[in-house]
Image (cartoon, rainbow, N blue to C red):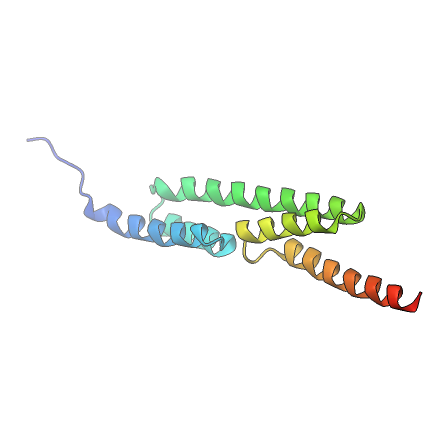
Length: 120
């Protein structure tokens, strides 16, 4: 008789990965990373958690690239394009500090720019 591996042992790992994937799909990269790490802590043989962590890393890199592009565009006074990059970074990671800071700087510059127009 050939022993077949039990799928019951993988159920918590699969459920944990499903929850982590849901976080990833919502752009909650930091929470997704933590959830995948929790899966690995509970089941070091998990196959889904390393794949999920790679997806989180790709999302983080994309977020950083979009923020860097946004900063360059903002310095070149291409504010609308910069805003598009920052918004895209927020879609990658809803907790993106660089995107939030970029958008906040855009708003404050716009305010002072219009104030300056009114004074001139």
